[in-house]
Image 1: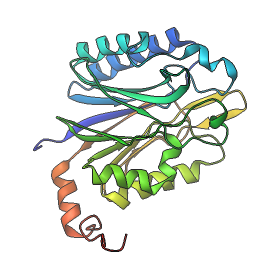
Image 2: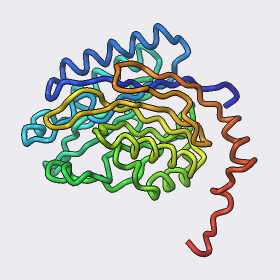
Image 3: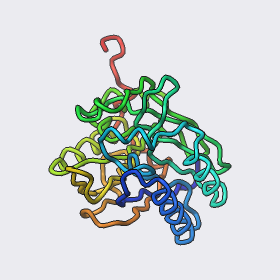
Image 4: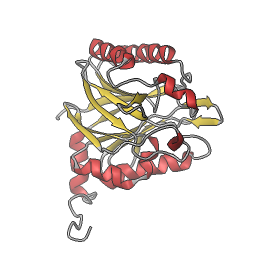
Length: 265
């Protein structure tokens, strides 16, 4: 790709269990971002943004299949605005379990990829089943690897996605206080470890006994924060992904992927 790709991450708060409100608000955000940035190609929302992030038994009530009401509304908005859109939601599995999932829709409104969070926190394990598949998908804006929040703490998943050819890792998050330092360091490390872009939108506000700090960020392949939120104010971060620059970085100093000792590990 010769031209830089413009992407955005959204930092906001969402109502627990109020899917109609959240989705309607997110669709309006998409329309406004596209109006403000006509060349925008991809918008990423935080973890469980469509449903709200909360950990109680009634979260099962907002679970939907991949092609449910939430998807049908976002596919329309994605196609109307000619955008890739990624959003978090509670997914209902075939066997009755639920998953903490993120879905990626393409500009034609197609369901391009669905990822179920593999690394659940100790609190999440009481409510969600864990995913079992690393998901990376080819698009006309590069190959996108999907992660969610705590997945950032595990170098193996990011590396697996990079070895699948991912150019960009998205990591929608609901990362709470007081662990902002870890969130930022993990994201930076996964970018520089694999010479990939990393886009990590986070929640703000309160949910039950959790307080989200924001500090959403997009990292370049050398681990530099291209754009970042200072704190917990609502807003949108916009950056341009330059794959020519990424290739230059990979060939100059950050040659780790090429120099791995596959005979040893």
